[in-house]
Image (cartoon, rainbow, N blue to C red; front, side, top):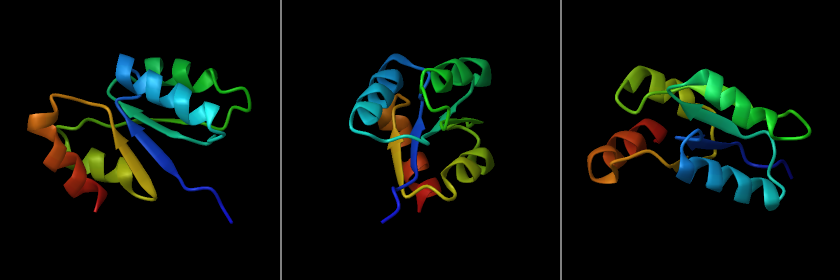
Length: 95
C-alpha cells in the first residue's frame, strides 16, 4: 500500500509548521508544502531528514495556483486563514 500524498497549505506559518512536525512524527514523508513564500517553505522542507518534502508556491487567493497545488494530493490540510473566508475556496480547489 502506498502512502497518501499529503499537501499542507500554509506550511510556513506557525500552525502549518506544527502540523508538518506532527505528520513527520507519525511517519509521513514526501509532504507537499504549500504557501506564498517558497524560500521559507524550502527551509521547512529541509528539516525533513530524507529530503523528500516538496515546496510549492500556492496562494489561497489564486484559484489556478491553488488547484495546481492540490492536484495529485490525496489529503489537503488547510492551515491558512482566516478560515471563515478561505475554507470554501480551498475545499473547492481540492475537489
